[in-house]
Length: 192
Image (cartoon, rainbow, N blue to C red):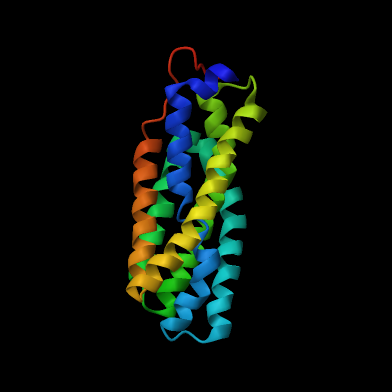
């Protein structure tokens, strides 16, 4: 466990997981209010959160099965890039339909990310001490979920718009996906 936590591979994975997770908490805190500010009726704005949930359930099953067919690494990285791209779509979306597309796509990709992260980490570091490694890794997600929504709120208050702060979070997701694509097993971090 100590060797894994001190390894450059774990530091890279931790940072990548943090950055990809920055945009993840934002829609749960801000999507409904953002949609209402764009003129979407309150009931429809709140239903966008349900679309995220439905998409997430579907994503866990569909993308989990897809990963078995095309490979976990490719599918997982696709989810990382997709979360960032969907968040960027949200930042520029000004219609109820555009936000509904975002909510469903984001849910699917977020669900796949959540479902495949443990397997991806085990593929990098192996099964030995997997629970401890995952526990340490999930602190990065927790920190990101604490940072993302308040960051958007503060930046939106300063700039009087949520689109730019959401775009900033999307850029964090892009940086995380790029870093995640560089996470590979190194000698001594054998898969298995």
